[in-house]
Length: 239
Image 1: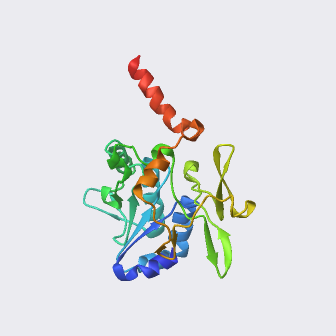
Image 2 (image 1 turned 45 degrees about the vertical axis):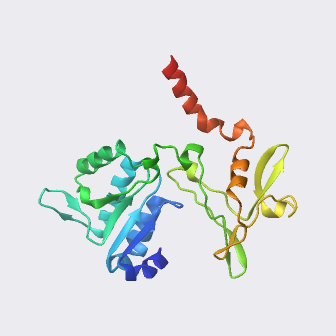
Image 3 (image 1 turned 30 degrees about the vertical axis):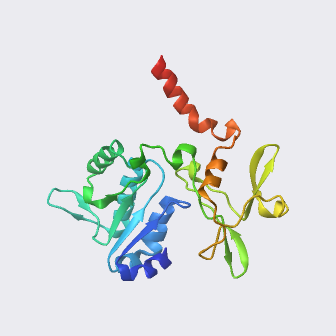
């Protein structure tokens, strides 16, 4: 986070993602203590961005924790407002149903609506998106001074968003794909192919190949949990 604050200082805006591991610790101790002076002196706006958990409570709690660290003023309506240099930026679980509840909770706690900035992406797609199949693509390893280290996302507020760690391989075993540690299988067994490296495209597929691959049969177990709610809704509608 310190690096983000330094790199983006010239632009005047930086967003700090706080839920990679422990959102509460990141807000209270890292941003609110270790980096407090850097945040106060940032030449612009520091956005604190939770990205998991209950959108209503997380938005309000993050606002409150930031006020504990950076203080607040009271506006003409009697609501508390964070200093101009810091705001909550919420983009997870935001839609026309949740947003009124978020604002209601902020109001209940005596916080001004201007403490939070909202955005939405997947919510604009009729909720047919990567979360429908519980899919996310994350970095799993990083090489530092020639040494590989496993990295992963593991939010305390949403176990579903935990990602795989380490250098990974993919093998086909008895008709099922399995993600395994790269060193546990031979290069010949590893189905994964390098596509990008250092900004260069190494492999370019024809779109017809991708269509053909997407239409292959896969075990129902891969998607049973994701489509079960859809089946239940359909059965209720028919009944």
